[in-house]
Amino acid sequence: MAGRVVGKVALVTGGASGIGRGCAERLAQEGATVVVTDLQDLKGDEALAAIAAAGGRAEYLHHDVTDEAAWVQVIGEVKARHGRLDILVNNAGVGLAGPVLEMSLETWRRQTAVNLDGVFLGVKHAIPLMRQSGGGSIINMSSVAGLKGSPGLAGYCATKGGVRLFTKAVALECAAAKDGIRVNSVHPGIIETPIWLTVAPTGTNEPPNLDAISEMVVPLGVKGVPLDIANGVLWLASDESRYVTGAELVIDGGLTLR
Ligand SMILES: NC(=O)c1ccc[n+]([C@@H]2O[C@H](COP(=O)([O-])OP(=O)(O)OC[C@H]3O[C@@H](n4cnc5c(N)ncnc54)[C@H](O)[C@@H]3O)[C@@H](O)[C@H]2O)c1
Image (cartoon, rainbow, N blue to C red; front, side):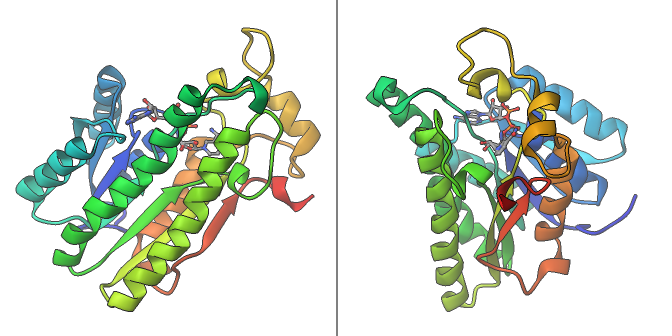
């Protein structure tokens, strides 16, 4: 096993599926002890089994990122079990698509609760333990939809744009406190995960054809996979990125270049 994050304790929200699972597996592969949290307990167990089979160390906790009391409990659990927290990947998210005129306030709020409140609560409750640990790295999962507008995704864009600037403001607060905590955002393009089953405003029940879409709109011509994002997250989590804070790491095959 390689050791780019050996000895570090990582918490990955939404880690049972897609990009979060990819991040959890990659961090464990490089020596971190990974606490995977999610709402999907069965998929969480599957993620743990895969990590264990590869020789990594991981645990699973049921966790709703919109619930502040749950954050207090999860961070308390991490402290009790490991005594420290070095890496937080605020990854849990939902993509609720639809034209703005047809979006209910309830849907808007549900998406904001997961994608934006969840990131705020994670940052708020992880920083004290990270400070006690002597520093750390917080990685907030934004999107290319946090960099450019996209029709049918106005609510999603609002949350991801919010994550982008929230990240920069918190990065400055941590830098001013000289607490050794770096805070960065990651902006995936079209990555094949289950989120596309809900995000596509296709008007049909068919999931979008990511290969065909990517061939049309992605300069590199292909969709990405969770490992493409996990490799970027690993770098931000490791000390290799010690001089990087408040940055936005775009991993999109060139999608936002035009
Ligand atoms: N897949 C893409 O193309 C893409 C592109 C840009 C950004 N992203 C972002 O990447 C992140 C991961 O998405 P994904 O594509 O892997 O999707 P996914 O649906 O496979 O994974 C998201 C996970 O978040 C969990 N989750 C949802 N609500 C939660 C809550 N309230 N509390 C805890 N966990 C919750 C889900 O159960 C799921 O396991 C999201 O923030 C998403 O917005 C994805």
